Image (cartoon, rainbow, N blue to C red; front, side):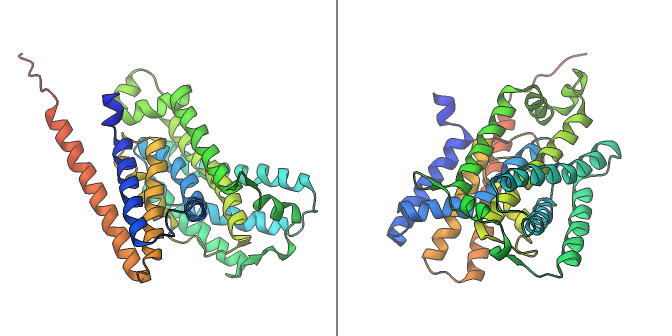
Length: 327
């Protein structure tokens, strides 16, 4: 029980609760069910991507192409929906095509990082630039509205279960499934082992290349699912709508307690980190803070959170017993 209370997740949860109480005094509208559900819904796409990013960061990597991959999949499924029949099979096909496209793009990143040994930041930066350029070339920057989308997709986007949007349910399902992978599957334990100590993991026979390809492919899979959620949320496709979103995704993971250099990170922490980021932004909007100050304030919170986490981590490392071995 003491270890749970002292965990990083509990610290973040305490900050979220304290922030909610504070914002309730700023605006009575904040602590209403509708507003809280809106916060969750608005940040579900970031949350889905952040869950995948957690695995990448645990292994010491980074993927700045997630927003570009999601945009590309959005454009492709948007164009497909314009010619799809208004039938339930179209929805099923969409849920098959989007993740497969994401896996393909993510696997390219993984193979380049694992097999050719190019640093992840370089690979994903290059992929981001290539995809963004192709997306703008194909669309000419023109967004697609829902006029020609199948009605079955619009109906799906409007589904609510006990008042909770299907987009939030997708986010929660992705988080639970990824938590299960990390905790109960072999590949999940290998991801955590590499994150904990890469050299030791390699000595016991864990295939580092396989794990790298897996985490980037899984990131691509979730980018495909995020593309469906994003299209359902906006009911349109904006080729430029996700520019810069990768920074918020990484911020959500880091706010959740993950070490940007690798080795630490949990799905629960990431979910709380994304929620914290969303609550801060929502609170600033309700407080009628100017847009540019919102960005400054959000950036300051991220810097403070990461700095505090790093200081705490260094202190915990210094407390570890040092054993000197005499020759």
